[in-house]
Image 1 (cartoon, helix red, strand yellow):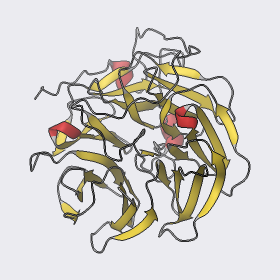
Image 2 (cartoon, one colour):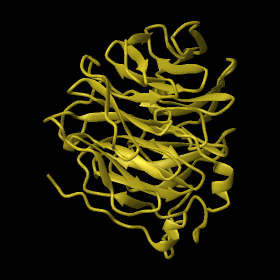
Image 3 (cartoon, helix red, strand yellow):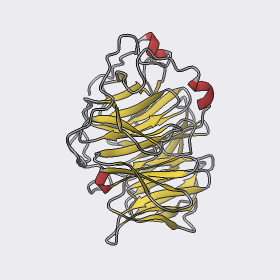
Length: 369
């Protein structure tokens, strides 16, 4: 097993910027390839939820709606602390952590990034300001394969894919609770709020109290993407009659279609008013009101894989072009925030930075917005 190594950002990056001397990338460059890459880990093993895409989740802003990869924070006060010596949208991405073995899930709180190290069977964290990464959940059994991760109300929740359990610990790794000790059904991605934990498994979405107890089904079928706010669950689905963006109560009741006749919808992300989704096998980024209505296309000709959103834009990882991109909430020019990545996957956003996993490179990356 390779040693986990840390590449510490320069002092300006620690303060929340790009770092002095960072070279600029072309913010308006476009990738030549369009399509969705095969979802396989570095071990060559096909990911859970077999098919042409993995379930993809709300990347979430640190101050945004509850989601698999989000946590509450004060973005307005944090934004005043952002410092950068490079032009926004043209900053050099830097690794926070390297040497990982197929990282799969990412989450955040106000000060730290949490992630699963799939083939090392560990759950880890690293400060957003830089510093040594810490293992908060060590390997307990061979081939646990921790996958999805969420942070909510000072707890870290994760799903073990092969060992088929759902568990949680405190932010420092103390106080392990086995919420679902077994039978979680090859769980992949995880969402959490102050009351419950939700996860995707073959056949649907299930939930359990954050203290453990009976498991209940919420969504039938296998969602392509899923997100959570304080009142509702949102997901995308594909069917012979066309794709749709769905909305339901947190117990799965009162399910309705917000948008229909999509080609092949994938990841979803939320803000206060809208649902954002990838469509056309990753080729398009669209949005629809949480109340339903017309679908607005924000970007086309992409190879989008996962989404995040904040008050100024929509962000996604480009699986074919190895890049991270952005478009405004109403559409417009697509900007490239990072290029030259090997396999960028899940991402989260806060007031100053984007953070994402590069599954093939084994890194946790960051770039100033």
